[in-house]
Picture 1 (cartoon, rainbow, N blue to C red):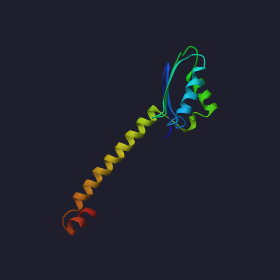
Picture 2: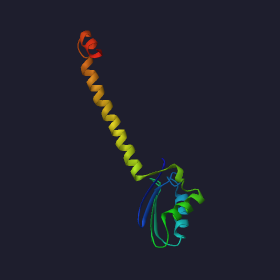
Picture 3: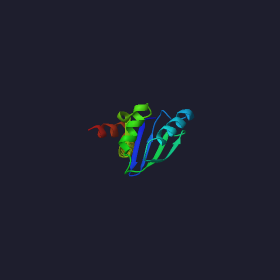
Picture 4: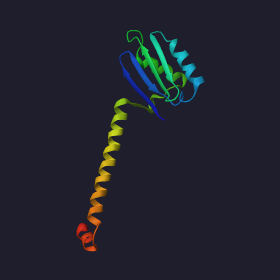
Length: 123
């Protein structure tokens, strides 16, 4: 599992392998985040490693929250993917799979039959 970040004004969601399946760390992270001025609520899901933070954007910025998590070792921004990067990667994988499937089907059709068909396909 890699790090992930998605933000909209007032809400920050990150995924961190540090909290995944680790209830003790999840409680520590939640308690720590609630001490930051401007954070309204924190929800930690240990099954997915997701931390959802609702905050007042007039009081605290996502950068401040991420830096605080980084300093405590709960988040590594250099390894994080954004929502757009995840979508792009998924779309690229689907495109690669489809092109491989289509080209495989075309080659199978070209190669079925006699040796003469194979020679014709190669020419």
